[in-house]
Image 1 (cartoon, one colour):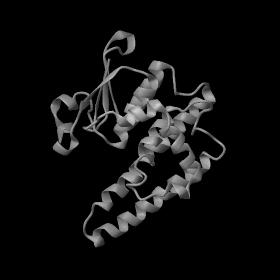
Image 2 (cartoon, one colour):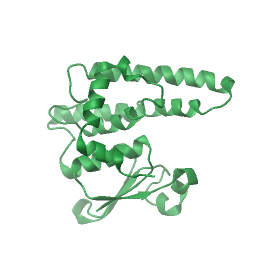
Image 3 (cartoon, one colour):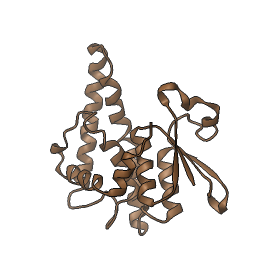
Image 4 (cartoon, one colour):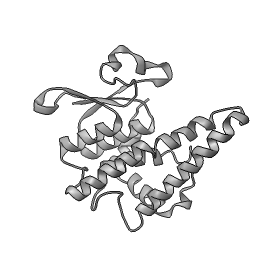
Length: 209
């Protein structure tokens, strides 16, 4: 059994989607970040950066338990554990790694800043940050749209990869960061196809908060 310590954020949803797609048994332990539960010593023991998500796998390497923190590392671990969604060959594995790092380094932090500045009440304080991060978020959507030209998935053929799950977690919030997917037809097509997958939908439906 895998215990998923999380909250209902894009980074949390990446993992619930992956677990459902991989058909792994798991239980959710809610970490309420609105009440600072991510700073509890018990959570710190498995997530040294005090951030969700984190997992504890009772059947880790050699049958011994293992904890994993950081959503990208969790996805890599789960792909290795199951032998699925990590790429069918070295060329695909490299592409999966590239696009997973792209998400972790940009398509997450940048729209996350849009979320932050949208909540700033003072227009004078909001203006520069919202403009800067909104432009970068739109640029990243453009990068993704070009990548998906003529492709069903971001990094692999035939089935999605952990890179798709990671990116989807943030594309799921496109309305919140004021992006109209009609501007990005390839992203819109990919998003609709991914969200229509039954396992992916279960990953979004499971209660994380």
